[in-house]
Image (cartoon, rainbow, N blue to C red; front, side):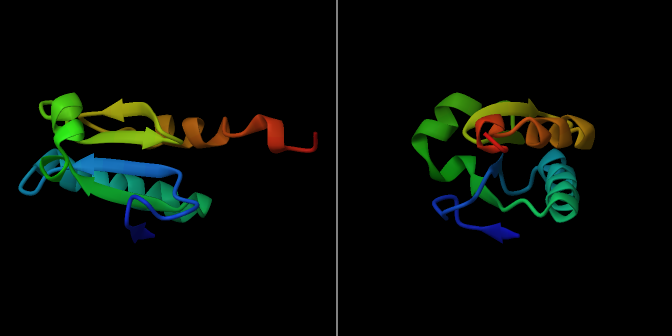
Length: 94
C-alpha cells in the first residue's frame, strides 16, 4: 500500500527523493516486505519537508518503522522484516 504519510495505521515510512536510483530500489524492497506482511506504508519526498531534508538529505532512502529510523541507503528486506516482527510486543496477549 502506498499512501500519505499522515494516514492512520501507517507503520512504515519511506523517505525518498525523485531521481534517486537507491530510492527506486528501496521502494521495491518496502513494497515487497509490506505486501508479504500486510503492513501499511507511505512514501514522503525528503525535498518537500524542511525537517526531513535537514535530517536525511544525504542519506536517502531512509526507512522509518513506527517513527524510528531502521535502515538507509541500500535497504535490506531482512532488516525491515525483523523491525516489523519486533513491533508492539505489549499488545500481544497481554
